[in-house]
Image 1 (cartoon, rainbow, N blue to C red):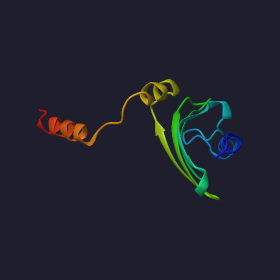
Image 2 (image 1 turned 90 degrees about the vertical axis):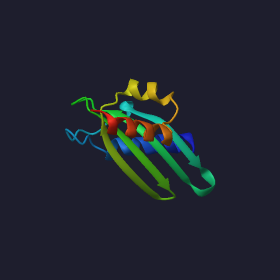
Image 3 (image 1 turned 135 degrees about the horizontal axis):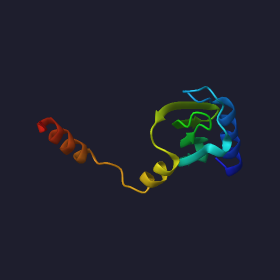
Length: 110
């Protein structure tokens, strides 16, 4: 997906999507792409977007999957701020073994 098309997509999102807490439309300036993956040969793209609501100050993450003319969106309210998303973006993903170790530790915790 070209940069111009991506900008159009973000404009469309800011127009279509509303804050799940207070129902105010999102402002394009508050929408930030955290991660993206594109395959132009199949006209596919995946975006992870963060947005803060101007009115109620809640934060939301959007996972957007574009497959040709179809667009799928999953929205999750989060306590991560825009600066938090920048900070955690630099860290490596959690490995399965780390999750299992944490689970075992918590199970033993008294």
